[in-house]
Image (cartoon, rainbow, N blue to C red; front, side):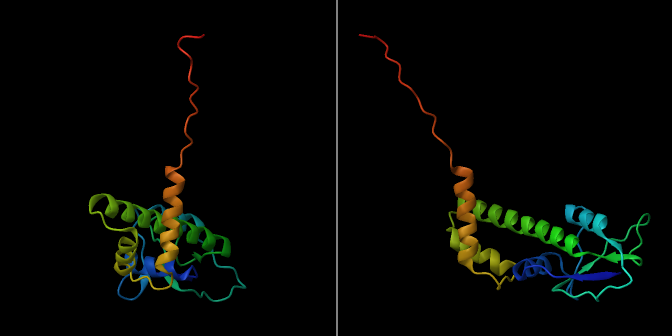
Length: 159
């Protein structure tokens, strides 16, 4: 098991550790997820002059029987870390929005209560409920805003 550390936004690290972390705090993504394959594609050999890894999550690198060996391919560049952070952020907000809309439609729970339940489920403390609520409202406004079709009424009997 070879690991590397990366730094991502604090609320994303809390989400990932709560969802995919093990008892040691390491994060192992299942091989069925897209992010596992992104990490597999983005790992590269460690450069000779390279700073030691630092960050707020420690990722267990994918280890397959054929292909890249994690003993030599164990480095994620800054660009790769940004790509991984963006993918995790997309996963986070997709799950949050799905949870909030589902709770509202099935149980009639208010948005702020369902966001609170989501945050307590994944032990997220580094972002406020209001920020997530505003994000959900922006998303709902975006998907529900439709332009009404302008109908032109034709006169049936011209005079």
